[in-house]
Length: 423
Image 1 (cartoon, rainbow, N blue to C red):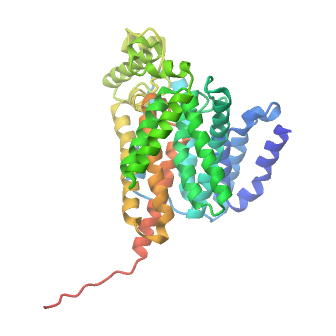
Image 2 (tube, one colour):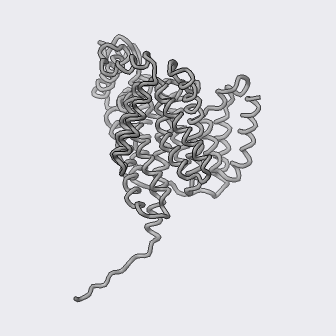
Image 3 (cartoon, rainbow, N blue to C red):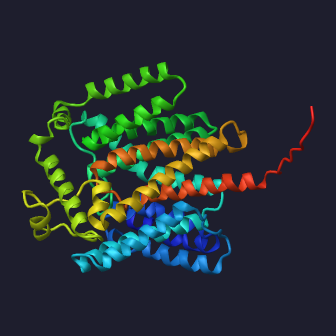
């Protein structure tokens, strides 16, 4: 039944996508984040649903005029330069065949992220996209939160097989990134019972993050709560609420969870942590030796013997920063960081320009929630290899869309002329 249901939903959406191409972006996002076919047990498990939707989107994009120009900005320019540089590093990679496989997977994500900016043309469509993202990842965070509570936090929470968020650590960060988006959606709801339901989803998602037993996610939670406290006006009430949440979570989790979290301060005694440090040394050395880095999928026994000879294990960087550094060298890392920095500046600009404007309250709240999502990504991502995961790039695209809305509104405002006067 699951196989038939998923197949009917995917193929049933094709006529709607051909008429309204942006629906294809919603379908693509649903397949990418939730991976519903991985919940099936038969023929649908390996069906190329994403390819079917992709072909349909391209057909609709060609023959349908329901689109806009991609907002041109410094962020887009640097973003494109990063992709061009990644193409060069792939061509000159240490293992070109393996690098090409990873490059194709990543470039597909990038293409559809750019299509998102062309087809998501207004705030209503942005909200629909956020609903799809939040509920797709929320399916696992809500389920994981219930599992954590029912088992007393004794087991880890895992994501969909074969996806970027299959591992407990990656899923935890993705869940933490969508919690601010859930809050944004909750504020937009008018029905109080729906608000309660979304509030419950936020609570269960936070329980799922804690139940993942991810040390990187724990650090990210601390950063998110600290950033929220700095930005809130009710600092005393917020501090009390944060302390209550921390105390409740700390006392609820079992001894095995505390033992794992204790390794954060004793990383020298933890093989996993030392493996990551050796991988970071590898990243720095290969970037120093090769202008273009090692290219995608350069991690091997042979390359480790050259660039991190003291390492006992061959592991990937487990860091968005060192991962990009190893793959694309220092130039690639600078371009990657510039995209993130420009995105943060764009969000700050949106918040400043929409403050106190009732007509732009949605954009203001969304920008503030996106900043919290990026705080989670920038801190938790320091310990995870999620440099090319769809979600942060989608959030960059959404930032550009709302920033473009603000610019268009400002351009449409009548110019006030001031005349010199004598007093």
